[in-house]
Image 1 (tube, rainbow, N blue to C red):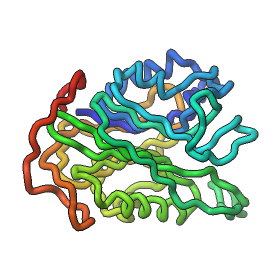
Image 2 (cartoon, rainbow, N blue to C red; image 1 turned 30 degrees about the vertical axis):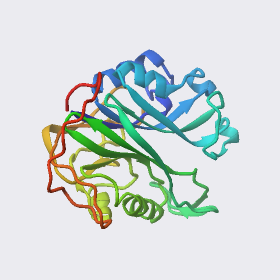
Image 3 (cartoon, rainbow, N blue to C red; image 1 turned 180 degrees about the vertical axis):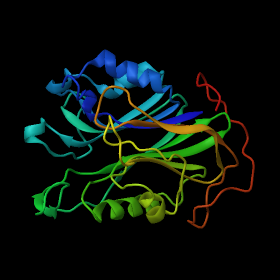
Image 4 (cartoon, helix red, strand yellow; image 1 turned 180 degrees about the horizontal axis):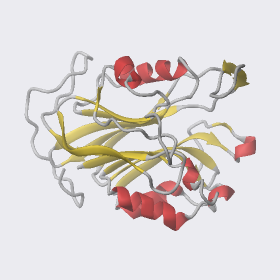
Length: 282
């Protein structure tokens, strides 16, 4: 199976400053991902033609299960933190997880965030700027493949230093009892080997993803725990939209175990093959 993560910048291209839904759908199709994590996803926003970008992506990739989780609702200039109770027709922005395999269980994790403005020094500036970050969330899914279940978490961590590390560690702690193999992917706003060092998870891809045209650092990551083997090299993709490159890798799942003592580890037993319906084999 192939897994992928992509910060889509609500489908906008930096070349023409437009959101083209056909271009977005083509980009998703090009990734040919069986499980896809998306960040900076719009739903019912005028800037993206009022589209549900998660549904557009789901149709393009042939997903049998998908979910969008709002982190903010309302229009960009009037955004407020989402409550998790937004109605389908309400304007929202957040993250999404899509799968060609059935999902047996979903779980939403609210991440710790600063409650007030914090100083951040941006590249090219000598003095810090006070910023108030958006709410941050992680979305977990128990994906049922013909090789057995795999836990997948998609997220978009804050750019605020130290808080992104705290959010990553929160995810690791909150998912310790989830099935292994385990995959965590998304825009982590942490460069290079930092996510692996702070999480204890194993990176599957080393490739620069930001900025788009001449990427100099890797902010997007695919991390795993448990028996996961790569079947094709991981790489980043310039899809002609967003300010990030997408990240993909081919994997094969091994043995599965649900930790009973809360400690992540690879399994010692072979699961029965599970019927995945119309989804294709891992």
